Image 1 (cartoon, rainbow, N blue to C red):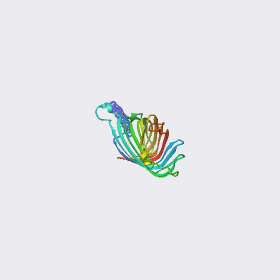
Image 2 (image 1 turned 45 degrees about the horizontal axis):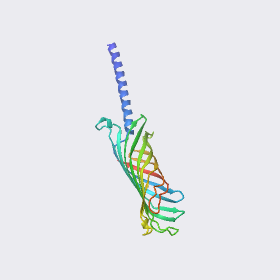
Image 3 (image 1 turned 120 degrees about the vertical axis):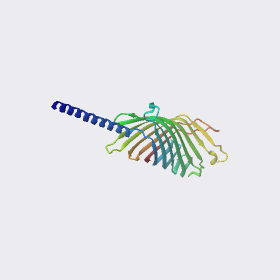
Image 4 (image 1 turned 90 degrees about the vertical axis):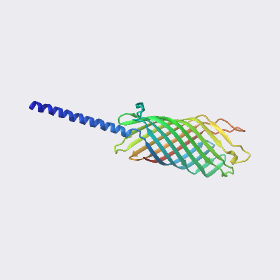
Length: 274
């Protein structure tokens, strides 16, 4: 009886140890699951300072209010099993704000119309590293910026409408980790390669004797950075977008070019996830 009791005690201790190990493993899995990309929607609002600069030619600066919507679908757990960890995402952002135009050549115009629309489709995959998740992704981005510069400038020149369109290849990496207060910190670094750019200038707005112009841009790149702190259904944090575009091909008679230009947009964003 004593021997049997001793064996039972060992068996009970081993069982408890196995249960404890299983609980720890399940806890680890739950932790990793908390960091994985999940299916869902988000609706965001951001305030940003926007600056477009053609060095020595003109600047355009605005304070913008933006609204964005994101739809994410995680493929993990669906057939086939090779989909585990993969996700697809669609993003739409619209931002607007009155812009001030300044040029040493043609003067200045205040409070011009400025609307920015961006549509992106992305595909990526989670890589669980235990205490954090890395999620590289790639996709296709479409960006359109409309500036309405119609009116007379401070130097007496007439302005016109201009439209900037970029098709780009975004390649990015998201790092996701859990903080001590059980919130998540999500940091994204992204490079955007310009596939095609086009600048359209409605020169006929300034004079009926002038012909509207469309110029192609072949070279350029951009960067996108953001750091979002997420707690429950809310996230918030700073964002930065940068573009560096080379001069366009010449076009029109006489020949025009769109000068090389840089765009900076620094903002603060809040989003609700559901």
